[in-house]
Length: 563
Image (cartoon, rainbow, N blue to C red; front, side, top):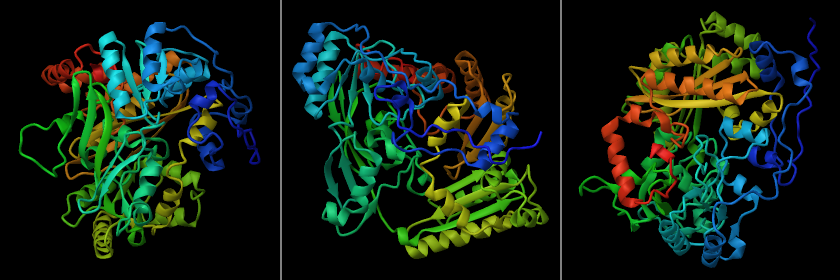
């Protein structure tokens, strides 16, 4: 059949209807859209054996309105007591609000919302104004045994916001989003947990104007959800940003934290290091609201020197050679690039098609260099810091890439990726409209086990019994001892039950192959069933003991972390 090269699907590019399911499931700015390029759409059609016809009729778009009201399990007396604490304007029992603040961005969340399904939502949404409100709410809920959940930016992909037992959801980003203090001498900043990523970074980048500082700074933390995630969310889920290989993961950036728990409030000490026994500061990182509510956090900051950034891109003849270069870079003694990414062969081939490079002069030239389709792998990155440091790291990176048969493509592809690095999630909405699912799972892995994990998980993804599947994989967070693997799978699967079974089989394969359950997405309720198998009975017993002490009535995010 002759291809219709002019065919373009009718993408939905209007803001969601007010109070609709789509206004909850849509990624990011309600007025912003990003549709797949012709190249990417062609990749999907070829790989999934689809035709133009499959992109002529949209499926469930979720533009229907949410019901005006839903049953409550809380008494009117309890609602009245909560209203006394925060005021009528900071409390809502509207069905739309209750759904909005208890659903994240996991594929299953989105599928349910598109189908108009409402489950596992809170009874009341509360917007605390300050720490004392949180203290009063937690004390009241503890006495009444009412579940308490916390909402920051809403970008959870692990069912971290679900409320299977109803209760209260605290939205911290409404009011508790302020600067507490900035210390240029110590290079630290203390903020309330609801401060969103762009506000946080803008404050630091413009520190001379906004904080009366001598220099400009950066937080160094840029997850793909950066624009729509909160500082507190980064900390309590142990998130990781795109520049983590230099600056560290969210947990590495934390100096101290302040929590309100049912057993009382505490603030960990803000020393750079101590030898005073096991650190509660470490235990609370990644606690996902299961032990208490984070009300302030002190983070490291770094001098902001964007004029010294240097980009690089290399193509390798195989995944093995690219990984060898990545390991040698990570174990070198010259410093690390801020950003380092290695795409496997399938992700590299998709990128070549997406950007219209396949079959061109560059493609043919790389073929002559041994960079064959189906095997070649792309590495991209950026060095940052003082001019001499950034230059030294770039020079050493190039040396190790060339040693492993890497072919330089200049920094241009990296700069192109950098400009759109936060916008790709918007494409998921457009593809979901036509029944194409895109989901991700990620894992931490040692260098030694990386080849096996990559192979075994891909085998399970590709063995999808419901149809052909694209599986793109990359490593994007690097350490001397290993890296992460980020699996992106694209398929057509209309039934929720089928998707759930398929997704769980992939999680099973990650754990069975020796990967961690998560590298930076957190646990939520999605990974909870695997936690005891993964950590072992003794470690889970320790977590349960901490839970019992800090939250004796089990009201804090019940079921999160498998607790």
